[in-house]
Length: 528
Image (cartoon, rainbow, N blue to C red; front, side, top):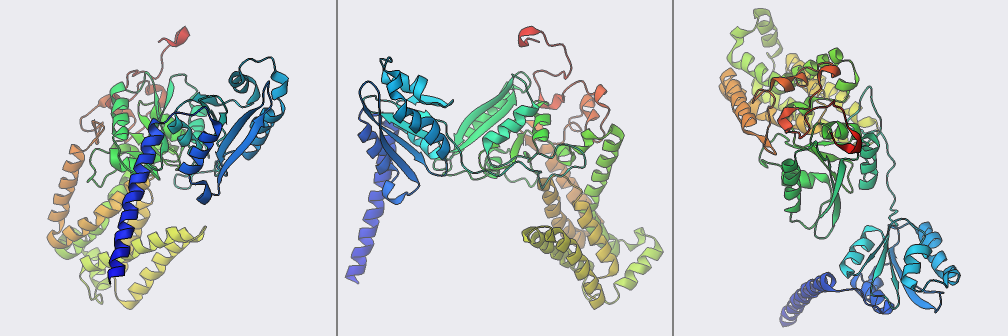
């Protein structure tokens, strides 16, 4: 027993010492400058990154042949840096071509201007910058006798190729989607928006992951106050790691308790560019193909790129279909319960008789019947996402039909109930944005429970409560139900309907753009 207590005390002491050592090590890195002794710098890196237990850390010692031979050291992470670029553009010139530059008086200038044959090269004196760049995938070079290090931009980790976004398919439009590399994503935006006023402001979030972030906006279009507010909220994030843009979305949104999304995420570069042109801000995060768009209003979650690529009449018709699908997916099960259990006199007698005959052998009340079917469909939907390849959607739809038919045969649910749940499920798929669709799916369950308790009165009451919540909701000080509340007649051109492009010469006023006009003469020198 005494030995066990001693072991526990020793372990506690080790943990305290380990935390103290890590804290001192971080303070040392933050304050320390590069030494003029190359070996001291290399040993510092080997100790800090634990070379003995980090087999992907490469430390290369070599000699630069110049007027006088100088020791040098190169450090990089294997797998994060381009090995071919290191061999051909760094090591080979430094080790073989130094003799050809004997006329150079200063070796460090020769290395910077002639020997390193790579575009992205920086000279820094703080060890903290060198460590962070090494962990990001760049290579670091030290030359003996000089108290500074070179950061060579050789990031080359394997990335997924650009492909079609799976969650936002369109009939007509580009097939390119974002990937997990932030630089590829910024390039996809820039190639579509070749505007010198496009800004990509870099930030880093996460104490340990140090995740790079780009804040994209158009200078002179996006309101400066909105850009500063987004930047301020991101900078106040205090967390050890950011693994996906969902972390940031949850931490910078206005109302964390609201079920409705107040920040849009998308995998489509054309969608991001379209919102940037309206005066919004995009947040591009390293390691995820989902880009955040802020601010966001309710109506934009039910718009699709197809609305703008097709003719305006077709786009308007599809929007009305989506709006109708929204009401079906939200209210149809609750209305079924209200009419069958509380207000049968409000439906035609023949339909009432057919519903009664179908429910003759059902042992449950209508609210339990609906909940059983809805929960079964949600389980099937979630299971279909986890299934590989094209089997998922097939199993989700076919499984629901098979289970529904089996339940009707067994007398557990009525045939009309299967039709109601089927229409509800299909209607929920019409929403182009996943966040908005799942919000409606969640609200549907309390709507069903209220309908089972209070009938049509409960459905109406809960609908008013949801409407009041939407009226109070804000996204970066933009009303969530704009342009309907407050009413902006000029912004109604691209809401429930879409007018022809030649009549949409102004950007939406609700986003407070500094340049409200889409079409105007641009003078030379970039001045409007």
